[in-house]
Amino acid sequence: MGSRSDWETMREASATLDALSIQHECKVVSAHRTPERLYDYAKAAAGRGLKCIIAGAGGAAHLPGMAASMTRLPVLGVPVQSKALDGMDSLLSIVQMPAGIPVGTLAIGKAGAINAALLAAAMLANHDPKLAARLDAWRAAQTASVPETPE
Ligand code: RP5
View 1 (cartoon, helix red, strand yellow):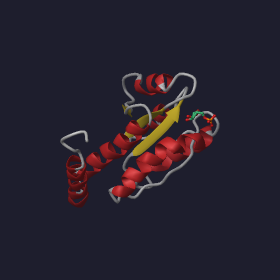
View 2: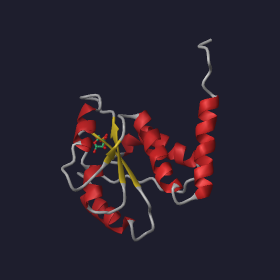
View 3: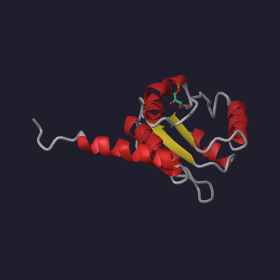
């Protein structure tokens, strides 16, 4: 994530990964304030064995796109809800990548953070039958938790 202030949103991605027993790390890497940290992180990511990067950022949210430009790993972008423009700035700056460097962009805020984790899980599950079973179970539990009536 681009700032510690993004953690309130991005912890939802982490909690979802935890619920699926997916090993992960959570780092603050700012495209603007720590560009060298971003360069080092993105350049080393594939070689370290990471499989996917979930990048959450707000405002002029360059982190997902810049990370994607420096790694072949799939990058999932989460637009963090900003104070000034409610996250529309984050969404548009993450989703509007020029052709050639994709960022899979999720919804603004908590829903996007949770879905980024679930999308990462779905990609990893293609090559991991045990994870596929956990993801199926997670989805079945969600379905079972939806009541048929509102009261
Ligand atoms: C972005 O600027 C971060 O991703 C964060 O959403 C936003 C504001 O950062 P802070 O000023 O709260 O550190 O780079």
